[in-house]
Amino acid sequence: MSIPPLLEETSGGAVGTGSDQSRDATLEPDTDRLASLSTEDQKRKLAVYPASAGFELVDELDYLAARSIETNIFFNPRFLAPAMPRLEDREVRLAVIRDGTEDRSRLRLLVPFTVERPVLPFSVPVLRTWANPFGPLGTPLVDYDDPAGVIEDFFAMLARPHLDLPGVFVLPDVGLDGAFAAILRTVVDARNLPLQITNRVERPTLESALDGDTYLRDSLRAHHYREFRRLKRRLGELGNLEYKIARHPDEVRHGIEAFLTLEASGWKGRERSAMAIDRYRAAFAREAVHRLCERDMCRIHMLTLDDTVIACLIVFIENGTAYTWKTAYDEAFATYSPGTLLMIEVTKTHLDDPNIVMTDSCAVPDHPVMSRLWGERRPLGTMVVGLTPDADRHVRKAAAQLGLARRVRNRLRILRNRLRG
Image 1: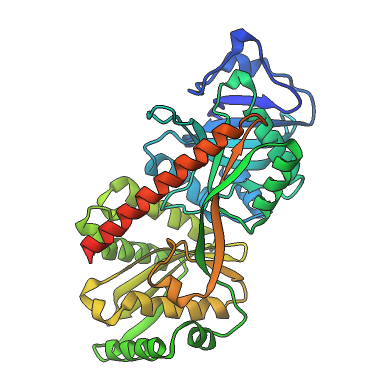
Image 2: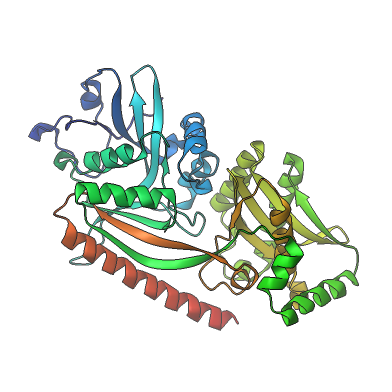
């Protein structure tokens, strides 16, 4: 790679632990130390790269994403590489573990993370996996070959004193019922590491063997089911109403522009939070959608009225899991609930698609539409892990900080919704 790692560690013993080689968490490249590393065969190495290295890691990460014990589209390199330089004001690093030799190696783990040192007194500094409203899932990618050993070595190498990194690792928005969470619990039990789980929520998901109409009749009350059918009929009286799915590159290119335009025309545009208003976010959205479309991992679902898009939903698909990422609709037709009508059509499509096992709504808890339409729930939470057995007090304090911050954000969100409504 043309971009050197900010740090590199080898499993089985600290590398360069002398006081003259002590390093702090600024993680500036130390080329002299890297050049002196041992090159024995078949080593497991941790390397931390700047976010800009994501584009050079795409091929390796594609392979890891296909072999990961648990899918996370937001850590797929075709989403992650365009996101890192454009979405975060904080400095995001990419931690990877490789097994092999200098000439031939294979990625075993990917964790995008930040080093967070709060300015408030008595706050606990932490390492935090990257997760935010644009990527609302923080499950790392771990190869299915020796996942427990990889996670154990990852924590052990991060805990080395000469790195001077925070002793608490925070993993937000992790699926608590997934393979990663199960293996992580096994690792912390085996190494006697402290673990706290906070910010537990249940996210609406879609996973059923029923056909679309039967599922919706069961999930919606009879009154609501009839009402949405009536709204669709009334909307169709205004013109030629069609449900379309953009899948091929040219169609997707037009679809993402339709989405950006619709989002900017609504309340997000008025609040200056629409992606099209920020050129960096708009560039990220276009590039991520385009790169995923190249691998047939993106669909854009649309409702059109006389060939004009009035509702739009971007969906990502990977390894049998679909993610309903972003949606927008024309507020001029708000009386007809076009966003909900579109989601009803998407529900039918996904239940009819044999390549989609589960759909993640990516929605906030108690979302007014998704919580009503979809009856399944997936437990998510923030896993707070101490890197050493004696970090229990810091873990409990960090978990309390996170819980307080979430409660404050939720209250602000409720207040904003009330003011908007």
